[in-house]
Length: 447
Image (cartoon, rainbow, N blue to C red):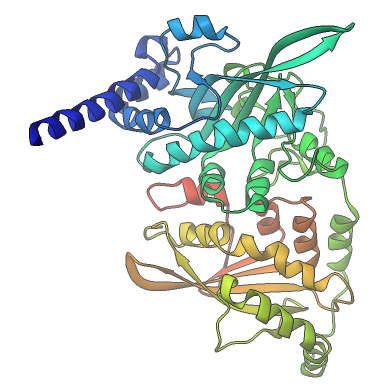
C-alpha cells in the first residue's frame, strides 16, 4: 500500500512538473536578447510559476498559446507555452498569451461585461498564481496578458463568430495589490492604474455595473492616449523612448511621478480646480476655531469611529482631533498598520506598502462622511507602521487635502496622484514618495 501511495505521489509531482514546463515559452522563441538571457537564468522560478498557473481551474477551456485566435481543435494539437519575459513599454514584463474558449453573445453581453468576465475568469487567477511564487529577485517591472475570447453576433441577419482580444499591462506593484485585493473597489482602483485594450483600442474595465461612467472613461482614455494603438504586447510603445512631453502636449510639462501623461492631457474637473484655488485662501487655525470645528463635527466623528475603528485600526489613545498644519485645519486620524508583506529596512518601501495595503482602502470611506458642510482642509492619516521581521516601528503621516479625497472617491485621481497632492511625513520629515518605485525596489532603497 505504501509503495502505491509513493508511486501515486510521484506521478502527481511529475504531472505538475511537466505541465509547468509546458507553459514556459521555449527559449528559442524569445526574440529579445536581454529577455532570453533572463529566461535562461531564472528558468527554475518560471517553471514554478508555470506549475501554479497550469493548476488554475478555468470555467471554460484555456490554453497557454504562442498565438491568438486559433481554432480549439488545432490548438489541442499545438505545443503550449507562453509564460515569458518580454520587453514592454521600455521595461521587462512577465507575460502570458492565451486563448480562452468561451463564446459571448454580443446581443446579451456588452463589451465591458465580456472584458470583465475574461479578466475575472482568466487574468486575475493567473495574476494571483504569478504573485504567489514570484519572489522579488525576479527582475521585471510589470505583468502583461494577451487573452483571446470569441463573440457571436449577426451581420445582415447572418450569424457570425469572431475573436476579441483583451490585453492588460499592469505595473508590478499595482499587480501585486490587485492580486491581494479583497474587494471590487480596490480592484477597480488598480485597474484604472493599469492599461487595458480590447482589439487594440484603450478600454476601461468596470467591475460594478454595465459600463464605466462617462467621466471615468474620459479620464482613463486621456491617461492612456496613444497615437498608434497597440495590437499586441510586442507593439506597445516604448515609453522610455518618448520625450518628456506627452504626445500632443506642446507645453513641455512632464508627467507627475507615477502618472502616465502630462497633466495638461487629463480633463480638468471642478474638484481639481478647487484644489488649486484653495491654496491661496489660508484658513483661521486658532485654538478657538479648531475647538469650534471639533464641536461642529462631533456627531460625524462619533459615527466615523463606530463604523471604522475596527477595520481601519483606529487607536484608542488618540481619538480623531482637528490640528493646525501648513496654514490649514486638518482632521488627524491616528491608526496602526501591520504589514503582512515584509518591507525590509527601507522606510520608503514601508511607507508605500502602508499606503497601498492599509491607508488607501480608507480614503473613500472617510471622504464619504464629509460631503456636506465640511469647514476644514483635509485629513491627516497618521499611522504607526509595524512589521513582524523588525521590532522597530515607523511613524508615517499622509496629510491629504479634502478635495484630493473627493477626487479619489470619484476615480478622478489615482493613489499616486493623491500622494502627489498631499504631504507625506516619515518620522516627522517630509519626503517625496513614488509608490511603484518604492514597492518594486527589491534592495529596499528608493531609486
